[in-house]
Amino acid sequence: MVRASEHVGGYSLPFEQPVIELERQIAALERRPDAEEFADDLKNLQASRDSLLQKIYRNLTAWDIVRVARHPQRPQTSDYIEMMCRDFCELHGDRHFGDDPAIIAGLGRIGPYKVLIVGHQKGRTTQEKIACHFGCAHPEGYRKALKKMKLAEKFGLPVVTLIDTPGAYPGIKAEERGQAEAIAVNLREMSRLQTPIVCVVIGEGGSGGALGIGVGDRVAMLEYAWYSVISPEGCAAILWKEANPDSNSAAANALALTAKANLANGLVDHVISEPVGGAHRDPQAAAKSVQSWIVDRIRQLKRSKPETLVQRRYDKLRKIGAVAWQEPQSSASAAR
Image (cartoon, rainbow, N blue to C red; front, side, top):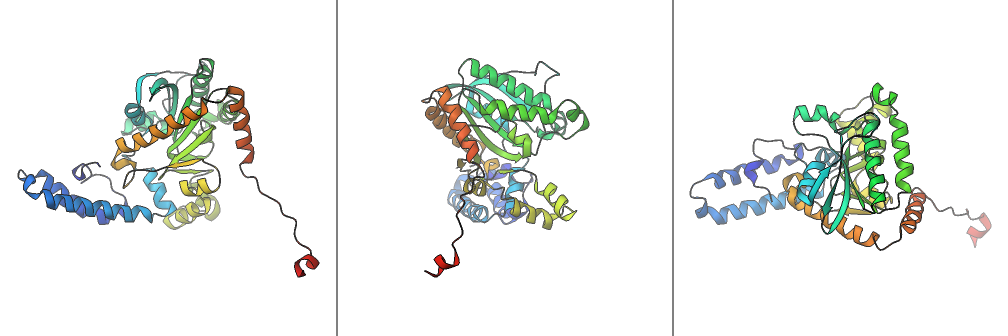
């Protein structure tokens, strides 16, 4: 668990306010020179804080979960790479236009496996966010990702993607350079890539921007991530012509964008639990859980032949949105 003192005075979510006072008390005790004398009090306060966080996070609304996924201290792709990977070597450029910092791609080791890692990067500071387009990739970002995935296929390396974007960049220049085409090609090529692909939604999973690196044999979401065809604000602006707290909340509920809802609808295969209070409170524990899931799924997938992987991936995608049709009973049958 991250020390409370690291959070005091920092960013806090509105529904976490009951926890703030407890964290102030914990921080004050931790700073005392005679803190050892108050070890029992500190332990009790920490237990109360954790219990309260568990209660709060068990009852989050869909809109609350969206705000957790956007927490400025939530681990990003570069953080997970640092915590999970060894010998990481970043690869740049799409060999068509340029490099896109909104997508990180490179080779590294996760557990016992050599893999290609691709993920969205939002940035932390204002300068980083502007450089990374706030995690909204341009077409060169998706072309870079696909170029490196083809390289992974050539050398028989599994592909790991970390999804965290509100959506693909919507600017005119991106459209002129073929934004929609780049994403569409990625969907096609990832669906038939002859190497294992595992995907994790670590934060935001918005629309085609997420799908551009989101086609995989196994897809998971972190517990407090969201994954949807559109953001709640975008949905609210379309349906109610106004995005405000009430309409955003209504849209989040209607979109069924939470990890639990996506699992129930068959859009993801697994939900990865987060530490108490979200991944931003204990990034190391979150990274450990993500790494464990990735290693386990790669181990399973590497047992299959490449052509078998492609066929199973195709079948998996074809089942999304499938419904069972039942003939309506006639009135005579119903009477019997």
